[in-house]
Structure formats: structure tokens, C-alpha cells
Image (cartoon, rainbow, N blue to C red; front, side, top):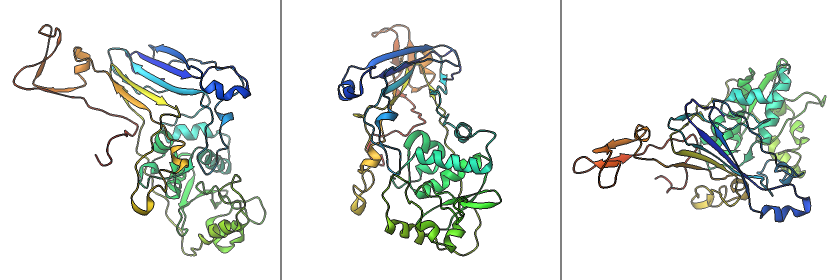
Length: 376
């Protein structure tokens, strides 16, 4: 966690108790949660929560595949960070040991890769990491073309997003990329060992040449569709589907010149500040889900109401208790026609100086804010 002092932040975690036996999983989920609180007064602070037991969240979920996994038990219900000091806390962040710092492309790349890796290893590792950290769904907008938004805010993508995400990750690792030319699909290729290679993170596909070692390029798949037909489309968790493999092969047909690369739309940052009295909560409580917007007509209930989207999207909360009697609070607000008085009918407070007055509370968040009317 990093702040600019002299801010004071409080981390509060809520988690289910343990140890418990595997057979007690259902009863454990209904037990009263435990709370753990840390007061942070320095720029970097480390703390440890000992869960105990032999079951954790990763053990009690479906395998990670093309779809969103089902989470059967969530050990951590929520984490809340609140600024209880008098100064603004700048860019507070919670980093879990062994997990990437997803606030930048370079933070993700540095977590996945080792300096000693070859270009082939870098390309493959980033592709595998992306597959394990996304699922196939969409709200039919361009929000998840941005790597930072995809990793920190949404989690889902379609092929048109994935080709851009993979290109940004590969470029962040110093690798050259090239756009693909499939029909009704979107891909990107990566260059290493003197050749281009197609690693499709959307359909979890890597086709091998006849040596059963070298990953083929899209151009090589166009010339030899059997390279795709003998590949397990959508990953090993899907059933064998000859028709699906034929379909995947048919997407690759373009025999013309290949040039250009997928554009980068990564602009977002997770930078934010917590004003005195402001708090951010990351929640994983299964009872606290956001189902997203609904589509109209033939698309109604097609994507957003499918389980694969709502199974992985949870609400958080940005809350602000603005003490209007403190000058440190008023510095972050826009007031008009008001003045802070030490005494009056209501004691120390803001009072209207003339006939009318107003206070505007700006709201800034690194996360999307939901819950209001669509388009409002």
C-alpha cells in the first residue's frame, strides 16, 4: 500500500473463519465472518492475515477456462481502505503477495516473465497468463480494449478485445506483433525465432506445424487447414467438437499481403485519491452482484444475463463522509454562497451567506460507477 503522507489509512478485511474440514464447507460459509483491521501511517505497509485450514478460494472453484468459473467458497468477503487522517491519501493500493501489480502493463509483464526467458517463452507465458485471467463475455462496447481496465475492472473480453490486449502485453515485453486477417474473428500474431506465430487467447488456440513443436503462423494455417482441425479449439476443458474445429479452420482464408498491427487503446490508470473521510471497498460477497445493462431486441438476455458474465462481476463501493465543519474537507468541495462560521444556530457549520448557497461534491473513481439509469 502506497500513500503520500501525512494521510492515515485503515485497511479492514472480512474473511470466513477457519480451520475447518472439507465436509464442513457449507456450514463454514454461514458462520459469522471475522474482521481484521490495520492502521497505516507510513508510505509502505505490510500485514499478514493467517487463514489456517486446508481449503481456500482456488480449491473451491471450477477450472479456469473459456467461461467464467463458479466460485463455491470465497474466503475473503471484502477489503475496505479508508482515509481517517486530515490529508489526502494519494494512490493507496493493496498488493497481495504473489499477485501482479496490475496498475500498469509493465507491472503485469514483470510479474509473468523472468529476465532469462527467451522471446518464445515470453510470448507463450503472457498468452497462457491472459487465458487464465479472462473469460468470454461482452457488453458490446470498447471498455475492455484497455489492458488496465480489463484486468482491474471487468475481467471479460471477446476476440476483438483480446487481439488488442495480447498485442499490448507482447509489446510490453519487447516483442513485435502483427494483426491477423481472419473472417468474423480477430487475432494477433507475435514474432520470435525469426518467424510469426499465431497464439489466439480468445479461443485458447495454438496450432502446431507438422513437426509437432513449432507454433504455426496464421498464413501457414491458411495453407494447411488441418493444422487447425487437429487442434483442440477453446481449450482442453471443452469437449471434442469436429464441427467447431472445422469452423475455426474456415475463419482463416486470407492469402494477401500481411502488415500492420492491432492498435493500442490502453490509456487508463488506476490512480485515485482518498479524501479525508473517503473509503473504497473491494467486495467479493456473492450476494453483492452487478448484472449490467440489458440489451434490447434479439440480443436481450444473450450476454449480460448469461451466467458467465454475472458469475464473475461483483460490486465494490466508493463512499465519502464529508465533514463540512472541517477546512480540510472544504478544500475538496466546490461551494458557492456559503461560509464556515465558528458559531451560529447549529454551532460550527456552513451557513448561507446570502439568499442561497450550494455545495458540489466531485466524485472521481478509477473504477466504473454503476447503479444509475443507463445513459443517465
